Image (cartoon, rainbow, N blue to C red; front, side, top):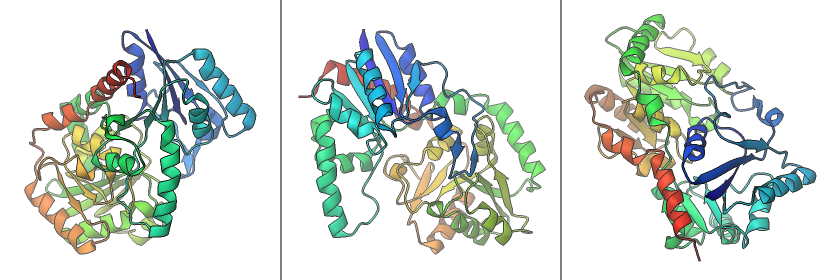
Length: 372
């Protein structure tokens, strides 16, 4: 039996289904080591609230927590990993307390596998880019395999010094079965939710899901939607530092709706309530809300600085990419998408490509083909 140690910061709703799948796999013994304690992650500063998910994110797989922000905590983490005696160590992100130190400690003794979603889509000053390249080349010398999430992510790893033979594609995914099940019931609930928000039956709805913070450019989504047509509404699911400001700015506008924090059990209904998901971020490593929306059958419009933009849209039916700061293009694209797109789209190819099983396949490949 192969033993896989996983190092991650804390339970994350996107990773929990994958960790459970790994734990249930025959011939694989998995333990997840979290580098933060429950108290350290209870309050989310971006959501500006304590977040309690209403779906299980820490159940169904063996795990332990450590405070890697302290020297004793890092030592306890390393000792726990060593005691587990893994055949490989999969690290989620290197730039967290204790993560790179653990990579360095086990490099050369245990294969180090890496999972991250950085890219090079954001412009950077040449001097800063040169320094970053030197640093990252050194960091990734401690990695045997990187499980890449997409095209932009692979370009980043190549630029950082990893060889083609060290890259294994394992696309970012969500639990497809969770998001696209109970479609009829959830669609009916979505109709009721629209009615509760006083959205007319013939209106078209653009949605945003995430943290209401400057980098997400939610204000441009709102303004572009309002400018795209008098029947178009916009619904914001999320909280954050700019929420109060936007509520004040758009108060009294019957076509702008703020839902606040929406928990996971309601999000499949949210994606069915909207006709188009918009993600206008000035910087976004991937954008898993796009995976979620598309799993529910909802097309998307994303900025050219989202990591998913190069991979998710096989056709215009699935969605479009727009320059992140071109307001006129956003207005035009939203108008066009709402006029032409329907939800009667065949998503089967997308669902099979961006399915958690792809990650399982990548792990099997790495176990069967140790990097040299």
